[in-house]
Length: 324
Image (cartoon, rainbow, N blue to C red; front, side, top):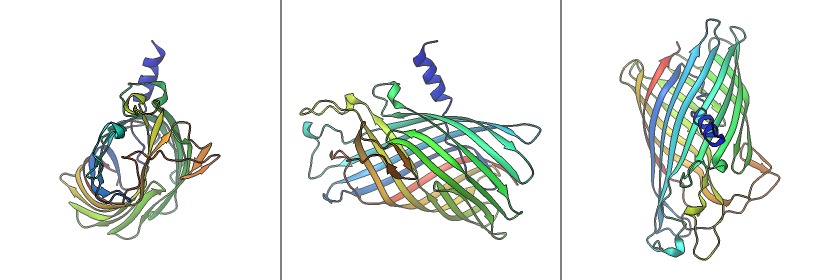
């Protein structure tokens, strides 16, 4: 088998991000769409950009008789920024594009070990292909990483999680210490999540409806194909897009059946950024968003300039397995 085909198979075999939230359910399948309209550019308020994101994930746990489990998953994401230039029409001078579509194909494989009734661990290996895919599956679009997560049950009401996540993002090695909690505050209220990735405060209304607040802080990088960034006045350069945000949502879960749930979210971004960088502009490593061993300077092209935080409209459908 050719090496390129092997790399492709390995990458597709790494395809779903780990659902590390602590909660009373396990998500088998989830598909969502998120839209953020009319985000004005900071220095050109008449111009704006729309952001759209689609995510689909499938996770397959294979339990063993001793309480352990093999964990496999696949998934895909599409991220699309679309600029609306009123004062700056798209011409050859702005050939860096008004519309991009970026893709992430993810795969994971891991193992969950139950050491005792109160203590367990999860080890996950991950791989991703992340780019605009205009140059196909070239070697420079792949990312590899993994995590280890330990769970300690303190009582029937509270469980702690702690661990470490690492991934070879295009800005350098990304290292994130993890701390999570599942706190059953009362029969109605529950707090769960793993920071800094996500956290939820949930109110149980009845068997059909749950509502609450949710925080998410994704960080993604996408390789930009050189053929898509041909500036008529400069040589082609190798670049990547760095997308990071902090999102706060008000959400409502509607259980259509015991396992099928529709979720609607209304959110707001905090300190969101979508930047374009030269591929050589990297850190030695980055810990939870703080870079070490280098500095970066974004490339000031029309689409990837400072724009305002904005509103988020999100809808999803999921199949969940109840753990309680």
